[in-house]
Length: 393
Image: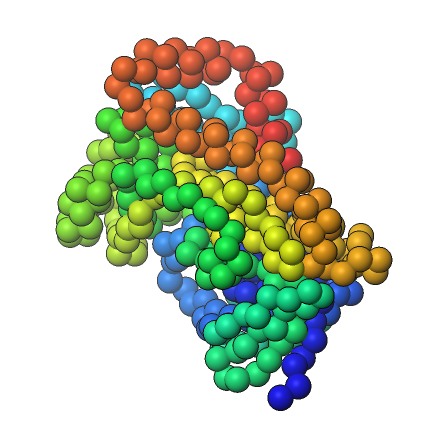
């Protein structure tokens, strides 16, 4: 059987993999995307997987034609973020005070996934192998050979692993990784709230827990947002307790933990939980292979920056390959090392920040330090504005 030949084959069509394929196809590269299942068209129910898309990620998604397929009625800008410690510490980050229109946009995973898929179909620049999967890879130079589950063969100068935290591409390429469990679970659920959130996100640190309320878009016929998405990072035993509560009891527990900030809550979606872990990869590249997204790194969700790091990977890889592919083949390690160097600092910075904050707020001995630090930060508007602009870049 003759193999189809591509410059880049991307394995995994999640948010980051689909965005990378779309971006590379628009740059004129011959790209294939392999995915086990196409995304399901969204319905009117609310997705419990919610992302805070940074302005820089939004610009990237707009540049590749994906954001235009989003339903504007299900996009919620975040104008303020109120963060409270376990004592007197508190910080407010405000878009207006920082001179920016908004801090982030809250979107649902399923709707963004569908928008990316619609953009891929509309562009027609990427060959889609879906539903399908990679069953074997014969690594080679100048091309690797990939065997699909249906028996077809592909050849690629570069294989991109966008297949998540348990990446098989990372394993098959012998790219070593270190997984550090946080000993916590993230419990997620969506609620309707009695009082409008007015585009404010809330975060509380208490007793080793981190509770975040992210604002969701309002009713179709009103601009008043009255829905929120909860992410509660807590010990596994407490996560099991939360999952075992009925809808009314869970809503009351979440309302109490959030200091009755938005009044009575009503559960919209069943609660779910997932383990939290730090993933460090020694290097995301090797000859003929590159990792992006959760395959390349994992961070604590307290800053909500995991998917934004992934979009940064996709954008950087796309730019490097677009600049070099006419002179050097895409799998050349010199090209891939350029991508790795560009992403090393932002990934390490975010992992260090989120890892450090997790330990700072889970250590009772650091209570004075964290609460005093939050008070001082809140009194320094220029520093807060600089933090906001850094997070948006």
